[in-house]
Picture 1: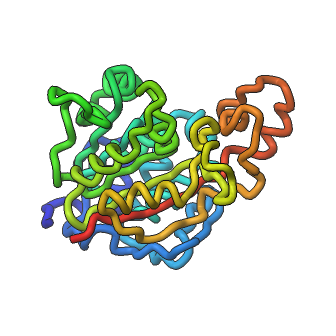
Picture 2: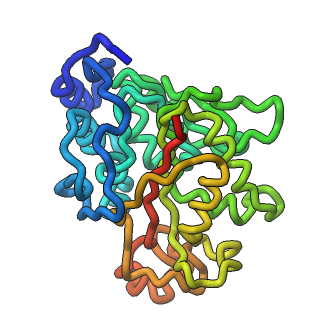
Length: 305
């Protein structure tokens, strides 16, 4: 995929200043050219270090600039130490000229990074969610800053009705889902009837051959009762892999960048006991704040060629 565009250094500078110029690499070198290593680890993004075993790629500079952009919300930036956006997106190999689909973006935590990064890099960004309410946060961003976010495309996911607007089949380079698979396992907004199988089938369909699926979710220990996946907000790595591989994906690797060994995954209000939700309010608040956000799996899959 050849693009007549500006050098990455200019692109990175434009992103850092919240600029609107469409700039990207002169040539797309093949998606995810930095190969992930299983069980890599990296510290918080203050140093924005590369996941273990991954060499620096030219597009990493633009990604760092998108994360450091002054257009990001201060409250979102404060959570970088838990969510590690650079290390996570570098592990998934998200390049600025990719067509990226983010599923269930919620209030737009990752949208603030991803949309400018790919829209200014020659790529495309889809926000896909269930029902009109699932896209409210992204639509507010589009209305508040059309220069930065006006190019976002929206779609339904999972698309259960024939009239739903879907991400076109075979068009996405990367599909990303952050902390959502547990909802599909719990049957969220579908009368508690799980729909993970259908969700993974639709993700597989929207990706091009060779495209990447990146999954981050709250990790339930493998020796825990599987029924806890229905109520706790945590889900087993083996469950996610089973869903993905049954849909046709091939597992590429896992990173421990979003791991938290202090999370025992057995809290009275499930994962929502911990920050940022802190469902118990002031009860043992200091204890849960000290634990931090949940222990999370970070898994990369590919749609075979």
